[in-house]
Image 1 (spheres, rainbow, N blue to C red):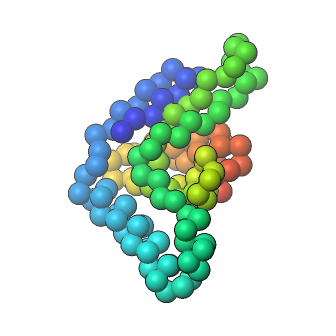
Image 2: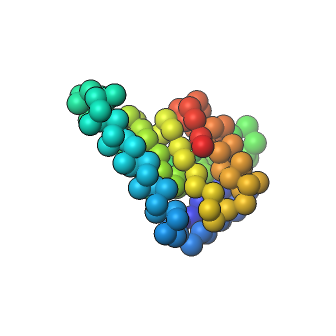
Length: 124
């Protein structure tokens, strides 16, 4: 997987996924399925939720800091995320920390929360 920050000109490449990484992602998918089968979510509600795993999401950059007319975006790939069906940005993002340092995880979550223009509500 990869993330690219055009403002910082930083490409991060991560070898993915590991067995531990997959286990945590599978746990989250099963938790979502349990919410549906236990009727915590109604059938119409469950159909409105999409699961995002490793898909590119382009986050906007801060135009004020860049000397260009059209700011390029930061491309991030969530380890796992949940979004409303028709929305571009996920609402909840999970960054699995097995292969990253704590400072890198904090930076990932800050990028999601700050660059999504308020669309990402939680990052774990």
